[in-house]
Length: 306
Image 1 (cartoon, rainbow, N blue to C red):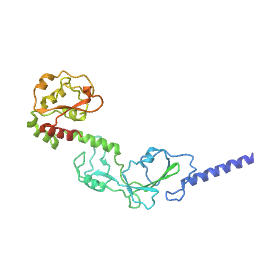
Image 2 (cartoon, rainbow, N blue to C red; image 1 turned 90 degrees about the vertical axis):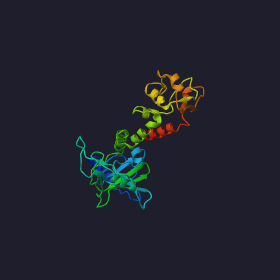
Image 3 (cartoon, rainbow, N blue to C red; image 1 turned 180 degrees about the vertical axis):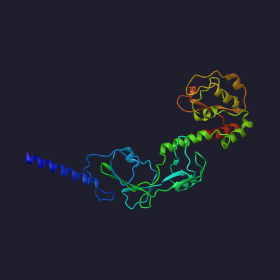
Image 4 (cartoon, rainbow, N blue to C red; image 1 turned 60 degrees about the horizontal axis):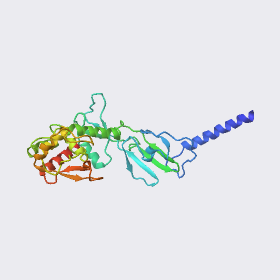
């Protein structure tokens, strides 16, 4: 019994020793521990002086992902990837959204893009933006280190972030997409003004619903059987798109009056073959190679929906 107790104490000491070896490593060590029995869950917001050991198969670790705004910096050791925190972009008026949240934008990685970003207005109050730089590592930015060694990816962070968390990449992309959608058809939008200027060329101005319909899926318009490249009026073409005169996404054609549609016009629209069988009319798309007014409208629509 006494011998068994001694064995238990010895095992506990060995376990503590192994644990100490695993946690006492530094990213700059010549040899890193490989006797790792338990890997860590990936941390999206690593903060303070922490160390983690991830599996080499962890996708986030492979991409050196972090929700902090980090950029690659020079490092004398080619085996170690070094990243520094850029901080966060905030509103100079310290405004809040309707639900009480502050504006914490993600800084651009490129220096020129970040300078241009600070010259823009706050998306909430149109006030000035300013950059809160990270100084959480002895007056310098917080630094993250990544190193691939064997079956593991070692991570070490030095410094504690002294600024709020910025929006994630997904949140930034969603915000930009929402802003584009809101400003695309605003009364002061330069793109909408250009569309209005071309009203005299086409005779009518497309509606909001018709604009993305024209160019968002240009390869799925089904031409009628009696389509022969005859003169077609572009205004009527938009009208039939709005009222079901064309089959969209492989559906059945609508009730547009194709005969009267084909008899009137000022633009020469011809069927252009895309791919697959030439006998299938669904493999053709309408194109206007000669009409300048249509080309001007297409360019404006493309700028609007993109």
